[in-house]
Image (cartoon, rainbow, N blue to C red; front, side, top):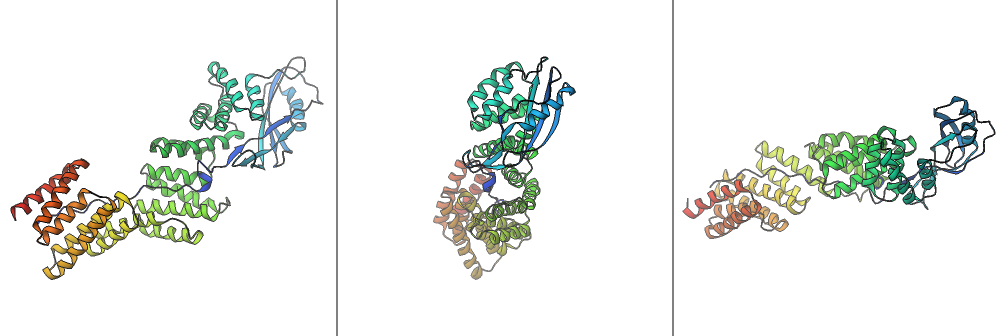
Amino acid sequence: MQFIRPLAALTAITFAACGAASAQEYQYYFPPKLVKRAASSVPVQGKGKVVVQVQLDASGKVIGTRIISSTNKADDAAALDIAKNSTYSPARRGPSAGKAKGERGFYDFTLAFTAGGAVQKSSPVDQAIGEINKNQFTAARDLLTPYLQQNPADGKAQALLGIAQYYLKDYGAATAAFDQAGAAIPSTYKKVAADAYAHDTQAKLAKGDTQGALVAARKAVALSPNPALYNLLGGAEIAAGEDKAAVADISKARDGAASANLSAGDRATIDVNLARAYANVGDAENAQKYIAEAKQLDPKADTQGVLGAVYLAQAKAKADAKDYAAAAKLYEQAGDGLSGKNAARAYTNAAFQYLTLAHGQDPKTAGVTYQSAMAAASKALQAQPKFAAALYAQGAVYANQGKREDAISSLKQADAAAAAEGDTSLAAAIEKTLKQVEGGS
């Protein structure tokens, strides 16, 4: 009787996003706003443009100012005076504008002076800032779009368009604008841009665009390297099959999670993802370590699929060492922790390990082992009906039990299923075995 080698172990590619990195639950960042511009008590010295960075506390109080750029140093004092005495609302973060809480932030105040000492009329960019400050994001977008058609290299305008599109929930358009802004994204908007890339990552993962998700996640982390985004990047890497990189990045998420005050549930989710990444690279010891840590943090943490991946890695190692009995048990444990086709493959692997084991046993002992092989094949078919490899295993068991007609029936079903799956090599192996059974050899 000819047997095919056990099927290659399949590790489920799944990823859980912690609350802070979920596209649905992600906290919006609302940058500071200018409420009222103060008049200058310092005389303006002539025409010029000065950009002042204003640091605000969580209540919107000015706690620091500095000049970012100036075309006329003589105007710096007037610009700083206006910036210091103007009124602002603080930066805020939360699930919505109404629930957002104040936090420290920076506001970049651009002041353009005329030769006569007055503040210049607002440009389209400044008008867009005003509209954003009033939460009129559509108006800001409509001001910036024609302006950028004529001035596509204006990084600040691109960043403003990105923030407008972000709050309009057009994350693809937002990230496209932030891509154009590049290094010109002001510090005020970096958290917003990172949020936009995080949303875009989740959207691409949902569509199966793993490479696009990976690019977007890397950009998010570059803008705001925090635990939630490292966790998201690790998820994109798992989806793209870059498991070693996922181990490194999710480890960074885990290392920073405690100091970032993430909830126990979110920290457990990061641990589960880290365990999954370790399982995918075949490191069962570390996978089990972080599964245990996740359960300590949150007893309700879903680790079942990860345990399945751990058992797959352990089973393959046992199979490679020709410890077929141990490999079969571990493949069955893997199947218990997986679902669908993943479970079917694990159980089928177990069936073929039992078949290989029985092949070297005396008839009395082999009979019990064949029963175990049949039970594993049956579990595979329950998880994935008409699964070609499982039907093949079932046919092989019947043949070895002397049940010729049942074997032929199962092998013919296996052959048809392999053809439907497009697996020509498996179909060839099944047909070879079928000829042996039909010929009575």
